[in-house]
Length: 301
Ligand SMILES: Nc1ncnc2c1ncn2[C@@H]1O[C@H](COP(=O)(O)OP(=O)(O)O)[C@@H](O)[C@H]1O
Ligand SMILES: [Mg+2]
Image 1: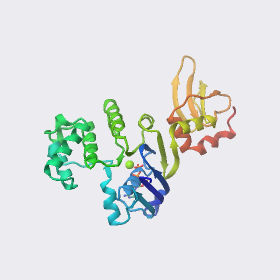
Image 2: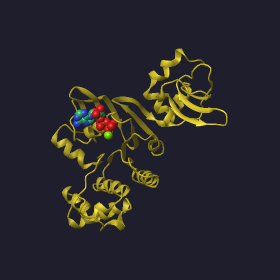
Image 3: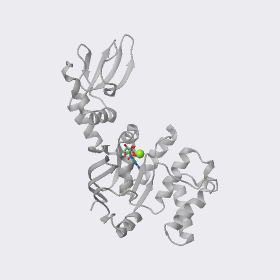
Image 4: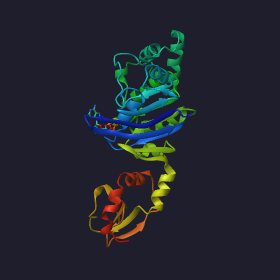
């Protein structure tokens, strides 16, 4: 049975569509939800967690239809959620905050709640901070506290909305490590606009831009992008007269610039098809197929 199933889910804000016709069927593993700002990631995750009602479509979690009160309650028992902007009681200590949430969620008597609080603190590496006031924590520690609260009920499905936003490189590494550690036999769905975080943590990616633009294996997408001949390395001395969204990177060299672009190279530019690419290039290609084609009329290869 699938853990998370969406059929034809759509949501508009005052008639402006934000999320359209999403079908999804997920079991377990770490799945990245990748999309630029405004792509609809938060709206989609809020619908999955039951905080936002879809205009159309159905969402079920472990077979529970979350449109019904009973279904939502049953689904929430299996769900952990880290919202994009988590709220904390900043005057509380780390431990009293988690204990309070454990008790609110009905996770047994006080001893059981205390035990689970300590387990979750240890899981995210905050044991030593248990008696610190929340307002004294760094951004990375707050992020880990948010993950700890989402793990209290030992969820089968963990949803994180932009968990790496604002983290420094060290905290970012730590986050990846933590995700890998808690991934076993769970579904982790996390959104980001940062390609590297997906590339180094997930096998599968959902690329969202209002609708699902791609869903599947990352390596398969990269292979597909290479096979389509979508990415080129250009050597040029004058600036490339193409849409800036097509330019993945530019590096000055001794005598010329070396730029990697998506879509056909302009005429009279020395270009070779790229054979070693990453998700960055594939992402640009998936999101901008019209760009890749648009300038073909001027292009030569
Ligand atoms: N409460 C809201 N009212 C009106 N428009 C909204 C609201 N929330 C989001 N939107 C719009 O819906 C689109 C998707 O937003 P969001 O789901 O936050 O995307 P993301 O999380 O990918 O940045 C954006 O165009 C945003 O401006
Ligand atoms: Mg968002």
